[in-house]
Length: 95
Image (spheres, rainbow, N blue to C red):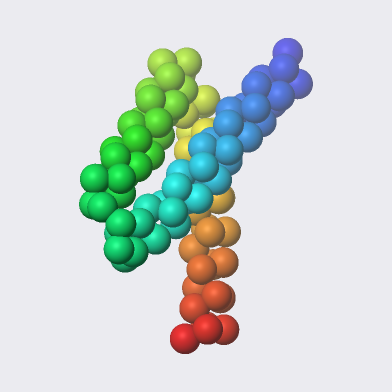
């Protein structure tokens, strides 16, 4: 029984990590759209879509209970930490 719970929470953690990877990849793309010479409409559309997908997935996880939302948020935050450190190191190498 405990093993099944651990597997379910690992799956929710992996879902959060996948959402985090998609979210921060879209954020990087969004930044390039905002600073580029493209229309602001595309950047705004991507921005709204990025937030809507994250809210929808976290809402579905929250409906499953406290443990799934915490596990998915932990996966999301792990990817956030990795992403922030990656871009910080890239800025230090190329000022």
